[in-house]
Length: 205
Image 1 (cartoon, rainbow, N blue to C red):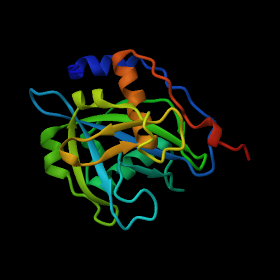
Image 2: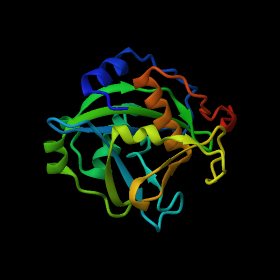
Image 3: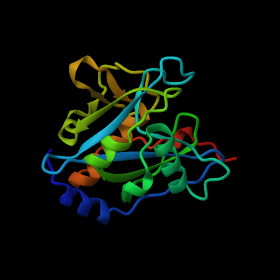
């Protein structure tokens, strides 16, 4: 899967996101595509600190819960991206909003996709040490390795469960993050994989 950025943009622009019912503590995550001048775009992943209460050491997408001061989930996404990575949202171009998911607690998670140049990325990246221990840029072609966790290697509650094994023994992307990335791949390749968006975790209040 090596699509040029212009093709990715066209597929994302044509996508009509499917919303889910909002919850009391919604969150947003950002699929951040870093575009070098000539090579294929890469995806930014960050690794949570080993001391975190939830999902310690897991690879994830920048994001978090909506604050009272966030006017929207998009505003939440931009704030979290800057707080966690140092990336200035003004250097990013919003490409799309994807389908909503629910996390394991039944809270809404809305994914957004943005892009920025490699120069802007390198000039601004500064991880928040309280949350993230390291980062990685994975070429988008690496997303072709997302597969069903048929052997039960992860503790994912959602079924079907997906995982992405990272190169060089860097671990796995799993759970909600892997499902969101599977959805992203489906959008840009015009595919349709079986997905659990977490509806069974949602409890109407």
